[in-house]
Image 1 (cartoon, rainbow, N blue to C red):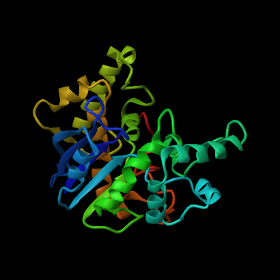
Image 2: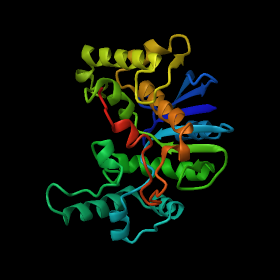
Image 3: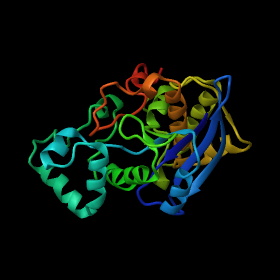
Length: 276
């Protein structure tokens, strides 16, 4: 089974690309990471998406919005309709509507959350700053829809299967809540480098939430360790989640999946005993 892991950004450029890790799960259950591709434009990313299937991919971007928010705004409550509506809005319009929703709520509960957000300890998908995951949804989910892939549990497409990943879940199962990356030069420390080294070692041995051993193309482990922003590593971690999900009933998703919210693969399985 071909496997794809994607570290996504809503504004790809040479400085910060969308990073795609391609691999294959072998007959013994190991995951071989063969190549990592830096997409410096959306056109580059769309070409990777067009890679013929079958494959299963883990994408580090939210696939849905909190139902509470969507119903409050009167937006469509089927996934394809919601994504089409959301994609048609300008970001400033989205920001104003989301801000008005938050401003009307009490301190400590400004944002609405999806059912999977709190167990994953992930940012709410309506958040437009620090990190701007609302823009990742706005840029990424419509491209999945346009590409004709199957968005597992949400939208029927072809034999290319897309799943919502969250690489931090795999990382936390190895190093707990310690930080292993930073976009800020001043925070790109030796301690974070050593944590990436620990993560890579655990991936090789299978000592992580996904459970499978990883094999890497020549030179790739050192690249993963030296990449201070961990774009390469996060793409690989997303691939680990996808490879795990490919072996699970219903791709590890709840049977009663909310078509507005979607779900992060590995919740609750990867969150049990994280950091052990």
